[in-house]
Length: 281
Image (cartoon, rainbow, N blue to C red; front, top):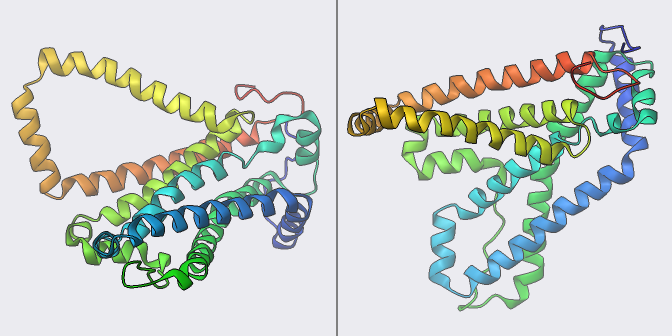
């Protein structure tokens, strides 16, 4: 059984565990931050080089809020990768022993990993994105001309509001909330995967998700073919989307998924022990 039976929360004990975690893993955390910054900087510079050589393309990209869409898309991947690393210490017996026998409670250990690997990546990623954007400007500013556009600083913290203002249908259909809750849900899913499969968590969770989706498709396709009216179904689906019901349904579904994933991750983490990492133990 898990040796940390105390499920209470103590703030001073939590902050002490947080300092310990950051100090012990500072090299890995710093390396991760540098990688995020480096990748975003490289992609932003390349993106500016491609669009900047064509003023029409650069203006179209800025008007279409493409930089924000691009950074938001990379962010969705970064959240999954980071969440899948949350319980990497469970991969070895020494790591499990250290985690399970530390003075902090199981609840504090669980919340600690959420704070660092999910909440932390939300903050760090957008800081890195802003720094990468400033680095892009510094690197290309001397080469700007009438034939090569170097856009000024872009505020990536306003991604959702910019999309809502540029695409009124986003605000009308609440797509921004769907995207945000989808990010939280994906974080919970890959956090759950990190608890179930500490080793190669990202790949195993990704494979499991698509295996389930493929199985559901194999089951649903024949049913729709033999028992469904394709034309009526298409008309219903179009009306469902344009009527605003689709976004409301997606908000409810993703919110339920997020609660389910985080709850399952918490339940299975409490069942972990030093001897085995098998999730059914």
